[in-house]
Length: 176
Image (tube, rainbow, N blue to C red; front, side, top):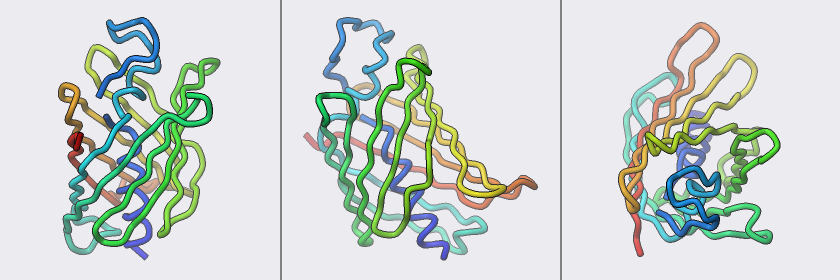
């Protein structure tokens, strides 16, 4: 069971990363599409699933991801293939009314788990995400950009008592 949960969240974590091709005309970082534009392209992923309640043994897995604009540039879509056989497709958009980012992940080892809500901090070049995994399980993700071609991320899930259920870290670098 830990494989299904950790695979979902490893792939989920890869949904919020990438370099700039700014769609709007604000190049200072106030364009809400900037972090989405950074994602567009082909990426190489390295994921480390740390030892935690759902992961009895630490493991590392690599993969690749292709990200593009879809649906009249209202969403970015990522297609992910990991070397352990995990595959996923995700969508992210910017909800201008609520001023948040929303994402949805679908994978061969998981199921859609509802809204993941993100916020962009242009000064820190970082996205912070929160999500509910299920009853009494809460997750947080942080995606830190380093220039246009690299991003490091971390995802944690805790239960209601504060027990660490999962911790996964990763690095994504631009392939092309």
